[in-house]
Length: 107
Length: 121
Image (cartoon, chains in turn green, brown):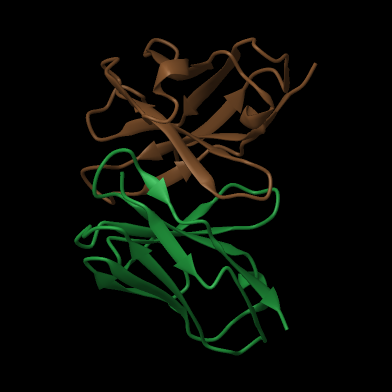
């Protein structure tokens, strides 16, 4: 099975900041990686698919990059509604697997 | 637009079987484009993929749960279901159904709202 590791596990930032999250796969997954945002009591929401493609309706301040084993999610200018937990997920093979999440908190 | 909705008991006794149903509305489950998945979120932990079922009835389960999981599909009702037997407190979680687009987005693009299942006597 492919293991997904996210770092950091939590980060504090302020509105307007630029933040970057990292996700690493235990083996190469090409660009078959997705990013999700989850707020308390809500289902995860798809932000990015195929490593860098923005899901319809997602603000352009979100961007993704990477291939192989190393991936990043960047929020260019944090908005109040962005404080949430972010998960990466590999879609290269089954079983599907998720990272443990990065919690973005208000500084 | 397509929506998913989970339903089922919120409380299950230890050693019993957890049974949930996901209803697909706004579209048909009988499409070759998607897999229909179950995912759970343990309190304070990450997301765990349980498995998927295809409209034809073929399924793939996470090896970590394979011995206890069974999924089924009812195309006449646009529903798919999860059975997890011999549950313990470790199965307490929020359970989501989700649509997996393996040939397009390669991601879970639509999720149900989730249902809390507690395993307790």
